[in-house]
Length: 288
Image: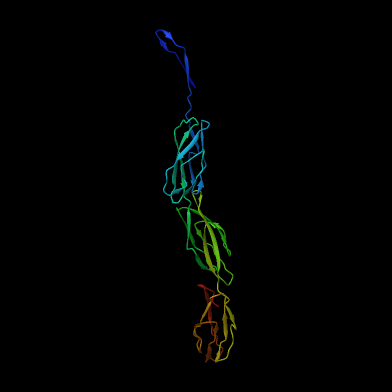
């Protein structure tokens, strides 16, 4: 407070003194913690506002930012707003904060800046993928924005968790049916974690082949009676047979039975060979 003592003078005469008191209220100053910060998309701000003058209230304004949602004008001692960035670039949100004391004294405004980083979006190619048992995956991982790192968990067969920009794992399917392997991949960039996504790999089995009455001995002329079967769904069985001198009747073919009448003009036993192969879902078993 400031006190003024006032005296009036007229014709050499003095009046009685009068005291005038003026109360000078302080100008509030603002402190923001933090005043400059960065965070990932979807995170809530935690900006504490304080003043050197007890009882000061705060209000702020913030302009719209294209690609940002969540920033709004407000009042209070805490700016707590969830800011989301839908772009692939870091965007800045600015809050202009004004103080006002309980005696209606305003102070200077300050600016608070928040850099909102995007969360990376991951993708995989190929996805989904299909391979045969014993083959190695070759799944390339990429992100928007570029530069993300990747980690994954895995379920199914002998798939394993890992990290990197390529999922390269040899998967073995010992069953008679196709099995799905699922990788759940999480991208990370500049401290921000993106939404996990899944990559499915269909692992088709190596088709099984059973040969009944293998290596029979027959007289000429007589029909072979070789039964072929597979427990693998969708299996297709075929064979080749090379020409043999003195023997007629053997030929390439397909099906579940090699039933061919073989005639030999030779005077000694002669061997005729059939090379049998089985395929299913694009996968081929070793020949027999």
